[in-house]
Length: 177
Length: 120
Image: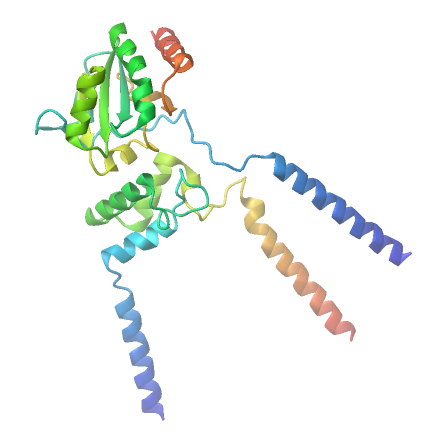
């Protein structure tokens, strides 16, 4: 009798661990960033690309209702792809689009803008990548949609913009108004 | 004999005292070893050479220079990137089992051993 109980217990434990393993395998353990995080710190200083002046991000975003912060670099290929979407966003005339030039060579960055057009109202440089981390960014390209009044991030896009994200940005600002 | 022991104790405490003065770069290493590199799974910020990790190390250095302590730096980064960035999980509802289970197993094992010994 005792032997039977032991046997059943062992079988039960094996079956249980099998199912735990099976369930564990189906679950993705990869980290997915929190895309709706609303915490933002605007108070860091950054230099402009086209002048030697410094400003805090806080000062850059206060004339329209919404801002878009786009982190880009000339060496980043997906940034090239998303550039047309930024130009389209600019033509909507509803945002301050602020570019953060991430770990880039300034000459290359200026070339990039000259070649593809300038969607940004202001461009600041981030040669060490520290400012981007202050914003909670992961890398390039990354786009933050910001409500200027409440100073919150409405949406964070990691990776290049596309049709879907473009439509979503339009939808979000219409709903907010 | 007593004097020798006393000297040893003194040396021990002196060495302890010296080690407590970690240089700044050692501090950066220490903190970055406890941080998960979010864009390179399975590596710490310390191990990684990715752009993200390199910037993170500069940021940690800056924060130390500003006079922030370890706790403040961790909580700053948790605030930006979430709980996941630190390797050491805090005790919450979700991680409760993780913390308590080893303790339960330890006590259970101890009971087993004690019972076996006392039967003999």
